[in-house]
Structure formats: C-alpha cells, structure tokens
Length: 496
Image (cartoon, rainbow, N blue to C red; front, top):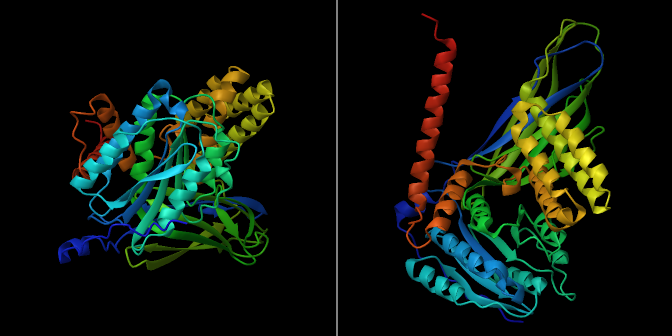
C-alpha cells in the first residue's frame, strides 16, 4: 500500500507569530437557567445547562489539515455540477490560512490523490486551483475508495501535533454496488458531506458517514446555486474551533434530587441515570457555539421551607497547541417553599419546544420512509400547533419539510435528505443550512455572506483575509452591544 508521508512541513515561525498560535486563553463559558424556588411536594424540576465556546481575541486557532474528496464520476457533468464544485474549491482555497494544509482526493471508479498535503501559500493556492480546474468527469462512483484514501492521507502524516484534521466529501451520485462508504470507520475525524442535485443518490449514505464521524455534518444541496454557501458554513465552523474534548458531568444531590430525563441530543452519555453522575461527551465547540442540556429532576417531598442543593455540574475541555486541560464546576441551589408559584423560564420552554419539534421531524421522516405520507404531514402540522410567533425558525423548518412532502416522489428526491440534515443539526446543535440559521455563529454568517458575493463575481470579488474577518466580527459585536444598550435605555428611560 502506498505511504502518503510526504506532507509539507510548517516553517518555523517567529517568536511573535508562535505566541499568537498558543491561544491557551480560549475558554468554555457556562450558564445555568432554572427557577429559584420549588414547592414542598414531590415535583419535577427542570434545569437548562448551556456551555459556550469562546475563542481568544488574537490569532489563536489550530492549523487545519483538510482533505477534500471530489466526485468526478460521469454524472457530475449534469447541471454544471462539476463547475460549481470547482467554484466552491476556489473559495475554500482563499479562506485557508498560513498554517493550514490541504490535500485533494478525486474519485470515480477508483480514487486518486490530486495533490499531497500541501501548506497553503500563494503559490500552492494557484497550483492546486489549476489542478482542480483541469478536472474532467467520467466513469462510475466509488465513494468508499475516495473516503479510505482521504483517511490514509491523514493517517500517514508526519506532522500531527497541534493540527486539526478534517475531511470534506462532495458527491452527486449513487455509489457503485461494490462501494459501501457508510461502513468505513472514520474514527476521530470530522467528515462533512455534501450531496448535489435532487435525484440519483441515497442521502442516508451521506448522513451516516457524517454522523459516524467526530463532529461532522451532512448537508444536502438540491439547488446547485447554493453549493458555495452550504460549503462555506461548514468551512467557517472548521476554521473557528475554540475548544476540544469537552465533557459535562451532571451530579444529582443525594437525597435532594433524582434524574428523570437528560436531553443532550445524540451526544454519548455514560453513567446510570438512576443513581450515578452522568457524563455527556461533546467534543469540539466553535467560537460562540453553544451546547444545551435540559435536565429534568424529580425532587422529593419535604416537610418545611429549606434551602436545597439539587445538582452539581463540572465540565472539562482542552485548548491550544499543547492540549492544555481546563476545568470548572458549579452547584445549583434552590429554595423549597409552600409559596412557590414561579412560572417556567422562557429559555427552558424554548428548548423544550426545540426538542419536541426535532422529535416530530424524526417521527415524520420515519412515516414518510414507509410511504405513510398523510400521517407524516399530520405529525408535522400537530407540531406546528404547539409553536407561537416567536418560534419563527422552528415553524420555517416544519413548513419547508411540509413542502417536500407534497408528494411521495418529491419527498423521496428532496424531503428525505432535508429531514436527515435537519435531524442531525438538532441532535448535535451544530450549524447546518437546513436549520435556517438556528445554530449559526457570527463567523458562519460572515462566511455565508462572502460566499454569496463570491458566487456573483468569482473573478472580481476579493475574498477577505482572516485578519479582515476578525475585524468585521469585532465591529458586528460592538454594533450588537450598542443596539442592546439602546434597547435597555429606551425601556428604562422615564417618559417626559
């Protein structure tokens, strides 16, 4: 087997540049949302835990080692699919930075390495772009071979310390009968998958590849004009990872509370919910990305008013080139009283609605997969009735899926892929264009805006550098803060 240990090395940086890349100041912030009181009788009590990735304001992020897997089978000649994929690669090349490396794999009936793991410079950008632009599409679709080659390239690297590895797979076709890409063990590498067009592919294959990976996402792109925008959203996340190895341990207070339910999406939970601490493993968080866990506790009956410690939480994570470990812990105290009349917090109610909507989406997809389209539509419409005007994004998601269920044929060609992507976004609380911006971070919004401009003028639009991106994000944050302060002033300023 060929050894791909020819990855380009990172030149030694100046002391100032090296300091910029340590970024041990990255953190995970925590919020706890719950009522302050609970009745004396036995009752169920809800606590919403939120963790947020926060990147240091400097240059800090790990260099990325990215392998893109490009489908060049014959079906890519349809509807300008090949040219749109090439355009997306041009945008990607402009957004990768000085410490990033890129290898390109192509596949049809077999996989080939178009270029080794190359350090991004002005020269390598131009050379890789020329190779990509020269690609032609023909033959069949061996997706498995492409995925295995990409993993081998990452495995054979000689430089891995302080690097963040990832794979992006773009394809439009049903894989060959001898190809079984969804069964390839991808290990601890995020794999972002993109499927083109509205026919002739199995979205479950792309969805399974992403969900089996470490933090990857599946994005269907039925309209090829949206490819660059969809691609840019995943790229922005990959280039803004703030922390890694995030785990959250939730500990009930013995005698004061018991777990009834822990809602943490599709993230792995370990521990016995009956009587032990439960640990949720999240992995990485992008800058400004959040993870929410809704905990439902059963509080036992008590005889009189008292202060009670009902829950403890601790979270651990790693940051920086040296994998510096960080740790924090909190306790949650409430008052048990016979006069407790507090209503549920709005943020807790909103998260409950999101979780229930996600369950309805999954239930509707399973019904539609069994050709029970009428029942699937009823499930979605029932879910809509529980939403209000403030739940506009959730309503938009359900309306879009209902559009794709206008007929079984439309569902089979577009609706199933959309539902799978939407389910994945909710289960992982990770950005995906299918989620209508629900989990987007500021950098993702910025990349999407830039991708739209690049699509309109690919030869004239100058893609902003990482330094300009940081300035733009800072300006937007200041603008949002000023707007919030103005709202507060208007609310509390006395009438003349």
